[in-house]
Length: 176
Image (cartoon, rainbow, N blue to C red):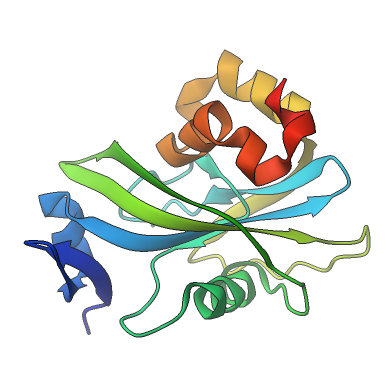
């Protein structure tokens, strides 16, 4: 069964098969979530079976809404499906657009609704091995340093978020 995502074709929002949207580089809707505990962010390492950027580190979770699904419902669903996280309060932080080559002839051209959610130190994770091979907490300044020192270990979108949208996602203190 193919997954249909909301993408713009000739300026009209249309359901398009997910892989086709990436092959053609069509602009499409997406969500990204950053779960935070104080100044620490939960990042995930994408499963090796992912069709693009396998084994790369990314933000807490990201995906494309199903056709007709709201961004917030999608973010809530994917936190549960990828990491087993439920019960967090999501805050919409920004909507951004980026375009990035993700390898193998695929392009992410996303219009992304970005959410943050606070979590306590007792947050329980139940990683879905089809989606996530590892997860860890890291202080935002340490993450920025790691990305600068070893950019190739991180997804293009995480690098873009940190370079261009850090303040709108994490607040004014993160702009330094």
